[in-house]
Amino acid sequence: MAQHPDSMTKMRTADWQNDAWDFYDTVGELRFAVGWLANGMSRVNLVAARHPEFQGDEPSAILVPDPADVAADPERALSPIEALAVDLVSAIAGGPDGQGAMLAQLATYLSVPGIGWVLMEAQPNPLLNPLDDPAFREPDDLTPPSPDQSWTWRVLSSDELRVQGEVYEVADGPGSWRPVVPEHVLVRVWRPHPRRQWEPDSPCRAVLGVLRQITLLDEHVQATAQSRLAGAGILVLPTEVEFAPVMNLAPVPESTADGDQPVVADQFTETLVTTMTIPIGDRGSAAAIVPLVVRVPGEYVDKIQHITFWSEFQDNVLPLRDSAVKRLALGIDLPPEVLTGMAGMNHWGAWQVEETAITLHIEPMAETICDAATTGYLQAGLRAAGFSEAEADEFIVWYDTTDLTTRPDRSADAISVYDRLELSATALRRETGLSEDDAPDESEFRRRVLLQAAAGAPTLAPMMLAEAGLMAPAVADAVAGAPVGPGDPAPPPPPPTVDPGPPAEQQSSSATLEACDALVHRALERAGTRLQSRVGRKANGGAASVECPDPALMHTTVKATDHGSLDFLLANAWTRVPDIAERIGYDSEALTQTLDAYTRALLATGHAHDRDRLSDALGLTVSR
Image 1 (cartoon, rainbow, N blue to C red):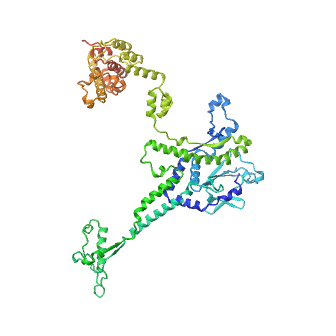
Image 2 (cartoon, rainbow, N blue to C red):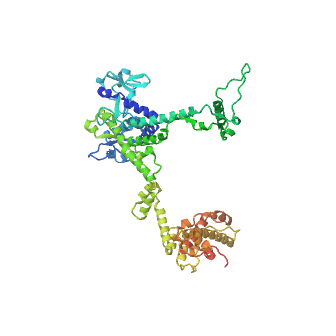
Image 3 (cartoon, rainbow, N blue to C red):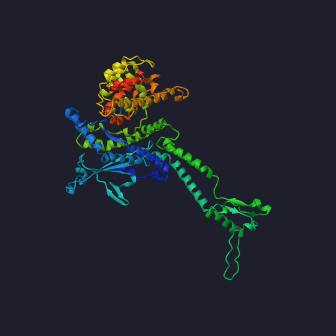
């Protein structure tokens, strides 16, 4: 269905539209602004939606159910008209890729000339006789093509369309025009002028004067640069001025054919030009820094003048051009900061500018395009498929700007609110950019809760560690019954239930104990050094002010769990275990678990390391 001829006659390009296109091609600031808006529009997605029931409500997009859900519950399937509406909108411009390019081009047309056209042409079926093809039928016998036909979408400017009588023609190239058959769809997308509704309007129309100023100022700068390159002005000298003989660098003229020397008309000018061109050709020449000596009678000293071709207006050109660009930024349909820059803003201010651009500039333009697509394409297609006008009017083409929305980083606030028990774990993962797949399972969650409880209550730590599976129950019972305090001895814990495997026969228990004793001491030193650093944060002088003769005993003087988690204190503490385990014939993983559980118990309870207790924990029999 093509537009009515009366409306098509208004497609003639006005003078202001030609000027706007010329400035779009020559003024970089305008090109950037329009391109910025077009790029934003290309990220908008078109969706099929239901018309809002009440004034002020947002249209509700039609959600396509999952096929598995439909198979389980057939009532969740879309109705025939809903399914057709979704298919028609999905087919716009051939799919999402084509839609982005179409929206970007329409944004350019709405921003510059204020009007654009979308031509939809049904592809003829090559198996049919041309006379039987719908594209060749007479208008009285028109049957609209079915929605599943192949369509070609083109976005056109008013310069690519014309009216010849009652026939509409589209340009396929310079001087190449072909008719648009009535069965094809031609939709006008435009912004009508608020005073004369039959004329298009655009933001460029109001800033044509500013664009002319920018162009004139640019031409002035270019002309001034060219004039300076062409010459440095005029030097006015009295005829009585001459060079001192010692500085006369003028070349000796060649003899003429009869042997006479030619007469030099102006020895001063020739010498001046020669002397000034020497440093231009050779910047290393002494002439570049040695002044040119001129001998002038006293009464003529003030008569030498240098006349230039540029004016004092040149000093004001750049400020005037910056002012014109600011006026352009205020007059174009974008936040001014897009053109003037956001260097002085923080990330919150920049995010606010982008949100304003989406809400006040991109979304209104998307509504204009959606309104044209709804009236000229979607509702017409639904009526052509046999649905009533009332049924077709319930559905519209709408937009989705989800891909454009950039939210600020609220992870720190989310963590703070979550710690105050005012935020769900699901919301915390969403605000920190994680998915639900990253949530811990039940066993991991239980284990971490127990570890947190153990860190907060050292007296209950052995029981919590045993419950979490990180300490043998026998070891936990032994440690729990030991007196707690930096100076109180603790009984050695019994062997853990974790069996590290039998030692190699060629290794003695004493050698095994010595190797494990060194590993535990190294781990406690690492933990003590980290404890000293954490404690020093709250003391004047930092970590150096904290007395720590032996870092391996630091946990016996301060409460380790008050300054860091056990995971933090023992991070990378057992990197040497695999090598030692291989040498003494132990299973590496089992030995690591045993030493880690033993050391965690010491850190949590504040007990000092003891070789005998370590021997019992490892299940070794060593003479004492």
